[in-house]
Length: 328
Image (cartoon, rainbow, N blue to C red; front, top):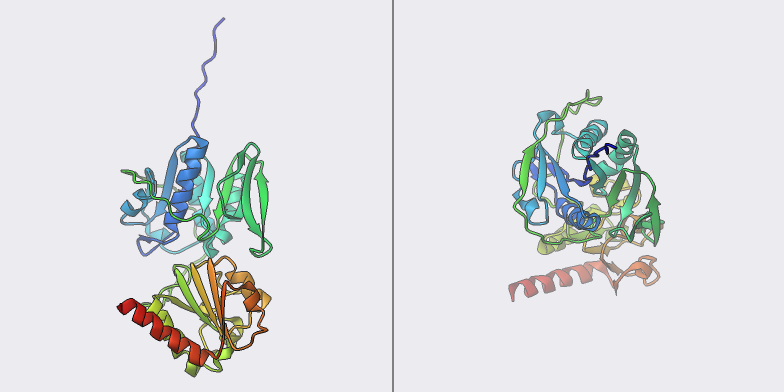
């Protein structure tokens, strides 16, 4: 009797890292760190996909052993359907049945489209490696980061959306093999004529420290104390929704459930009462410090450290103390 031979195809882990103007974004290193550990747990290989990145060597430090490099000017600006299609092509080419994404606004918008392309299950807000591979069970945050839950994915292809600043960075130096990848591009449905980005300032998404102000500052003319402290700490500046609604600060600085999410190592809230919508957007921050003259402010219940006092007295003294510490 003649026996049939079967070719065993090894499935990979595909990590997609975001970039801007030819450089990988800060969250890329955490994505690669997580994906490298996931590949080890699955006893498989890691493939990292980058779009229009000039230098990929930094990714090797965190375990990016094989890098698929796409270079195409049509991918300079984000288009959810186009990017989802490119990632899907990369996943099929590399036989990847585990795809790891960040939890940025762009990837959260794109992930459901990618899920359709690959007929895959998608779990967002993931904070740990899977606790079980069969069934595939993974821990994630729920109820606006107030609780954790264990969720399972039953589909063959699985998409994991890693929460920002949840897993951390793990160094795993590799040489890194870079291969050019030329996917066929579908027609873009959206045309972007221009993009404006504030230069010389740390973005909220990339910041380790965020200094945020609320209505307690009484007006835009007093924002200098926020900006001075942020400059001293090397931090990004942010604000509450009422502040941006009143035009005191640009909407690009609005953080919270209806604004930008914050997952910084240190979040300093000055003159912010702590409405539930604001807390929902900043709960992923590691350490939360609140400065408010109202001891009944709801934010104190969610804070790791609280200072009850007048912001116009406390903040300048805090800034002075930080400057003295840096000079010592």
